[in-house]
Image (tube, rainbow, N blue to C red):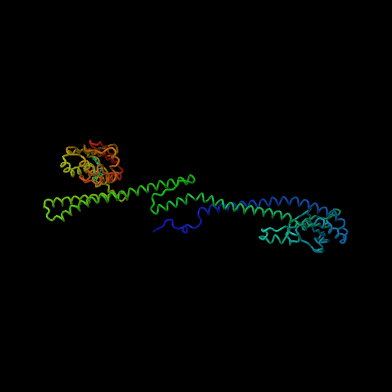
Length: 494
Ligand SMILES: Nc1ncnc2c1ncn2[C@@H]1O[C@H](COP(=O)(O)OP(=O)(O)OP(=O)(O)O)[C@@H](O)[C@H]1O
Ligand SMILES: [Mg+2]
């Protein structure tokens, strides 16, 4: 059997829930990155600003203080001074000549070397002060490492230093460069700590976001899941299944629409079952009658010739009845499935009515009924002639069948604005008010017992109605029990 909802494989794993969670996550990551970047840069700038100002002041003071010693060219006197000053400032001090060559290094590592750091070049080119941040191999003890440091080995093996440079001026002349190198790792460390804190917060928020969106998406998709379950049940044949209307307005409306559809479907199903069971019953009746007649003929070989003939005539009648019912059923089924095609043509409706009246005249005479036909002869309709004559036949046949001897029947055709109106009036038994709405239903008969003798199956009027509807017409009935009935068919004429 085909299973319409069988696999999630067919539709992939990315349902509504996955989409909700992932879109939440994307928004969160984007917001975090924007937040982290702007906050670290604001904090970093703020810390740097005050630090740079202080360090510059220090460098300028040193340049002023050491200028006198430097100008004498006495390096031996200069070195102990910058060593002690460097220790005091816990940094490294260097004095360079106007050529950029190191004259004194408080670490005594690069004496005599020419340095080409951008800060020095700037001063040599005439700037009043200059600073820059550099990363170099770590020399000082780092802060306590956190687990996040395992993800950034380069950060832990190096340190950030600030380089501050000012010119050394003696009697208005630039004679060298004062360089002060100091670790700013503490600053970098606070920025990193801030970043770490933010990462932790992000992880916590991210996790709660995933949990929350799991819950939310469950709430959102729950109605869909239950609707799907009901549809699956219905597709397996349980037409009684209904959805419990919950969720937002949209879901409630969807469920309501679905329930309405289910109700219709169930109704259609019931009607169909009813139709099939009625049809079988109708077909069974003539068959059992024939069986009884035939059996008595078989088991009574001595049956009188007259009786035998009578039986055969009855059997023949039953066969006619079966044939009529079958062809009526076929007409109805065809019209249900939209297969009943109209072969329209323009013709004088009055002529068709007269034709039918003539065919049924013997029956009316037999029942001692007076028949009066009065038709406007100029009414031309564009319709299926065969089907219209079936309409007239069924209505007239009913009038004859349901009118006791001595009654009268009237057939009229008149023009009314843009339509033709056919009226079949009888002085018959009439239809009780409670049944009047139902006479057009399939297999409906007012008096089930009487149908035995009249031989109707209750399909005639439903066929009449179908045909009239197919022609965009209308049929109404007015009746009074014991007085008579009038059936009126209205057909459009253009
Ligand atoms: N002119 C009428 N006067 C009184 N009752 C009528 C009239 N026409 C129809 N009815 C009632 O409506 C019912 C349905 O009519 P319908 O023509 O559909 O079926 P039927 O005549 O019983 O059988 P058939 O299928 O042979 O026409 C009838 O059984 C009858 O009870
Ligand atoms: Mg009938």
